[in-house]
Image (cartoon, rainbow, N blue to C red; front, side, top):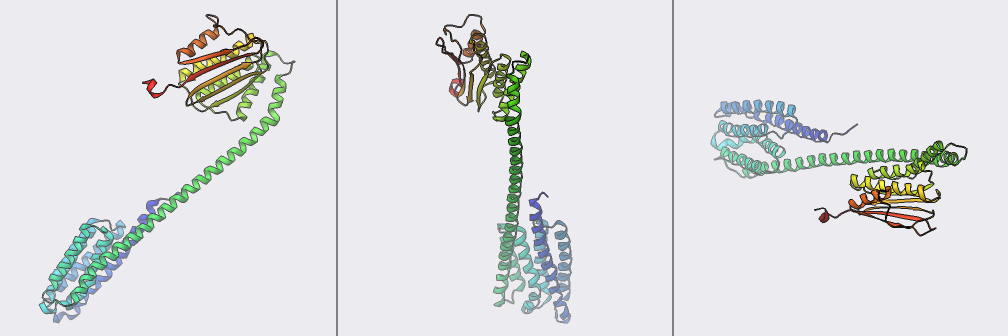
Length: 386
């Protein structure tokens, strides 16, 4: 099953939202305490108003936070701050000036929970720190003139609740992020393992096919191709099949130029040549250049078939890389004088095309020593192209 990282992070946000919901609803109950001494309050209506506002806001806060599942909600956070300020300002008016600490002590848990809302909702930010400062300032003004040593612990409470909430939020969110990273790494590991297993299975199947072709099929095809009883067209088809099989089991690279050279190799069967070939294709030349080079190599084989007098011991070597292309065709035939190619002949046209595309060729053919044709094309540098 595919893992969604946002699910872990969203679940963490929901847990933090529910934690603060419990704190917000629970601390609202403290506002009921002053109402139990109704007759001792100088303005009972102020206490009742503060309690009603706190209860209403706590219910709305719980509903919204539970539904959205996050404290990253500016409306939720700033509404809670505003109601907390109202509760402080209005609730403190319920008692006489020099008895306000008695009433405000009951309001303190509700107000401190707002610092926690700021810490979890906004984190460590200038706006959150400013809001905590305003809460502390309004708390001090609400208690005035009943200032005692207790005020210091109250103000410290606002700061600590905020800082602790910030740290808790960082820890929980950091843990969620680490879980997401670990799960993604595990998924990537599983994907790589599955890919490795698929490749291993593919290699096993390929090796099995290679063994079957090399040990069982190819010897039969080559024996059939060498039989003097076959008609020429069937023998050529058998040699072509044998060459394709050898190309398959040697894992020759499959690039566009490699395909062109493979066709050149297969054409040797049509020419009744017993060809040994090595193709090392690491990079492709430009398409037009590749066609010209392959045509020149094919013409070199045609020349072997026409003039060498010995169809055996023909070798084709071709390498293509980032530097260019080198093709060598060698036979063990009679050899000839490598003067200028006959005007209008196939070799003349093919090799002239190689030269037009920036390449060159060499013919080494001592009498009786066979013939070696080397075709070269160097890839131009960026400066030369410009």
